[in-house]
Image (cartoon, rainbow, N blue to C red; front, side, top):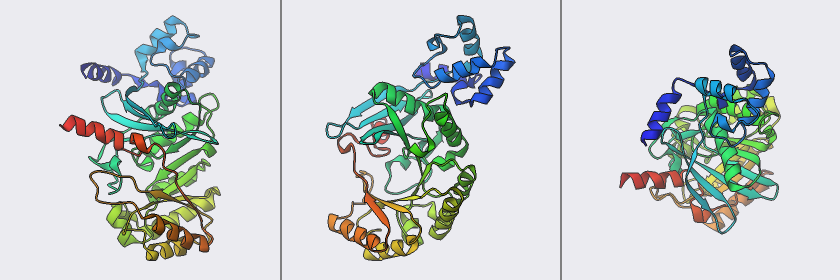
Length: 357
């Protein structure tokens, strides 16, 4: 832990080079008297799994030394890694430069491998069904720390990453600037070059930030954690609803769709006797009918600190039927890695409990 504190103190006086956009990196190198083409060389290295400037083998030793005086490169350490014996899902608990922990999950699909990344250490949203929010938010992740989850998950797992979902620990729109910076970095053709249409961002619904995201027209997929169609139910399980409300959120989603032309996916965790009644199904169908959206029903995860239970199979079947009768596209999310605590926040929470003992 002492080394981490020493490294963090040293880094405070330096610039996080991996969070710089190409044009910013170019400007920094010009200040150092370096030609513009060096920025492209260095930027390419920053999307590779290196942990120091020494890994930049086509850069002179002199320039590497000068870079290390002005900038720092931080790389996460694997605190814990679990591989599912059922479906090959790989879950990582990463130790960050300051000793905090975040999670990433690599999932295998027929259309390619997907990594689920975190954007904050902890989460401030307080959703009662999610392990990520237990203990609240510690800090935002830098763009480089989000990017590293993609880079090092691929390098360690040996699985080529072609898709990204921002559905890990934290609320992406609460860390808006760093998340947008990460999206631009990971999308850049000289970097990871992952197309925006291969990226999904999940939010609990900070409506003003949804509008701000729409203005950027990034062409990613927006997934909204709805989980209830009425304010009474949603406010009980998602405190953020007390600030915005279902109707205000859906209005913002409508504006997003109109501006970007991108269909919205609504996430809906099926919670027994809480949000899965016929009343909820009918109201959800009423509010979403004609919007062209997609509803993704999610089997509830088992969080030991929570009394909430997953819906019964027959309840889920009836819920689906009600939505489909109204012409709403609905699927049930396949649960991956159930044998390795692959659900959001569980592995980090296990680490916290271990420290508390």
